[in-house]
Image 1 (spheres, rainbow, N blue to C red):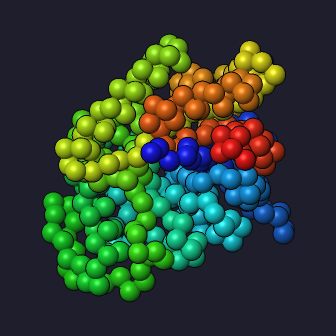
Image 2: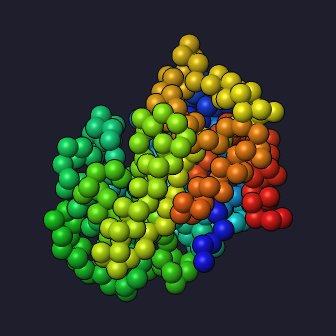
Image 3: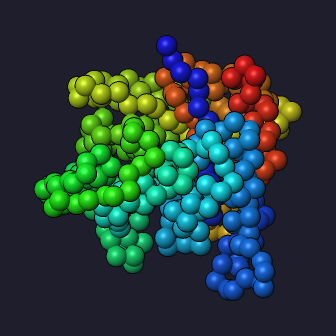
Length: 344
């Protein structure tokens, strides 16, 4: 029996946020000291949006990480969120090329205990070569061994969480009798989420991950074509996971916007991608959000609910919604989508 559809959101940070005046102020003032007694506008936005999401019935928040930018650090923001959330799973992005798995094992255990068992890891193999080199790492962009390294990274994480003393010798990591004296809050280890499109990456997902942010044909011209692509992706991942005796749950990132009609909602959504927007982060959003706008989740609340039910029937377990992250919009999604789809 399929479990109820889960709902997630991105924590508001510049490179995944559009349409927010607070975020624009945060970006504009990031290189200068704050006025005395002021809080960073991005943190104020995140605190309000995530506290509202916690009350509205959201299940998960993803703290995306970007070092070469004005973003607040993902781990710091997730740690702070333990003080004003009580049910959201706190999914923190981790780049194996920048962190040691032993250190991340300790950081995750710390967050998990602070959050009463709500920590999770979003494993990111990476793409930004300049950022990785500037911050002391690499992404192995043209090398399928990036997935070997990612899989070894998860092996060390789970070994450290599980064993009193853990040793491992792989191609990229060697661990000799490492001890993690602070274990996660729950007996079940924190879950691993990841995304990949290449054959080698998909095999890594099938062998390693608990959740996969699915890939689809971003050139699909219609919602129906996108859904056909998604159905093929889900079937492919299920078959890959079956070969390894595993099951991987499926997540998808549609863009959501409401309006009195589909046309009104789409017009409002497209204004977010205006090419004359001065913020370079917002200008880049067209390539990220444009395809997800074709997911069919822009329209009246009833239309969006119906489309989300279709995705759930396809086999999607979690929708990580993209939208303008204000507390008002978060609350509206709780009322118009989460509560009705859960029969409340």
